[in-house]
Length: 296
Image (tube, rainbow, N blue to C red; front, top):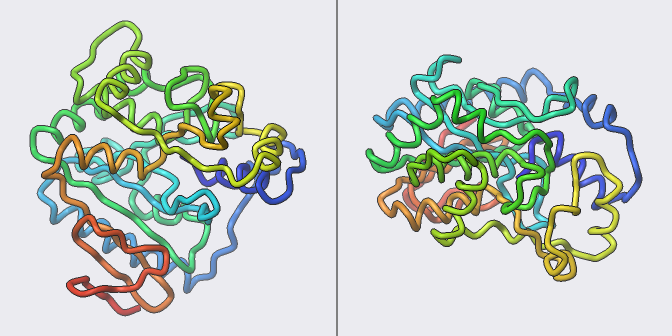
């Protein structure tokens, strides 16, 4: 749903409801100590090791950013990790908001940078989905098709973009539409509309992202990068927005391609935990039976 920047915008709306200028969000930075940076880089190394050992050419990857627990979400930002990415082995192709241009762009980022993009260096979560061979090959081909990838990119960004509208887009919606274009073998003249139509036909469920109060919904209208004018009125009244989040994509992939393998990794100040399987680790990053634990 949210890039690091946009998540900050949404949470500001949730906590303060005050109007703020876009440059404030674009100038946000996270102070990170040398020890924290070392820990996150070691975590990224373990993530990349899982990618390299997978034998796959592509993986769907997501990370946890800001604390979105009030919206019932752990993961906020998804992308496509590509073994043969021109930007570097396993660089993540993703949508991000270009502050200097005030528009969304596609960006290839190494796994280390992707992991460092989390807003809390003391703790981090990354999930990896390794698709069955044919499904993975289709996604890899689509993600590396520059013309298609750009054709699916909207001109305007919204952190909480309506999943079935074309006025705005967020990072996860681009991934969902890319996946639809790949698996649906779509090649029409209206790529975004066709992708959303295919997702609907296959029972894709976006969110819903539950907004805790009408006040919070109202406050969001005054925050840059958060919009409600694309959502159905009934969703606004119900405080439940159809927004693509990493959990939506994972649930859809699991249903469409049951042989998909999931690996989830998290870290605290003391340890890295690696879990192979669909049972979620949870925000506390506590190891269970069969999990791999790497001391820090």
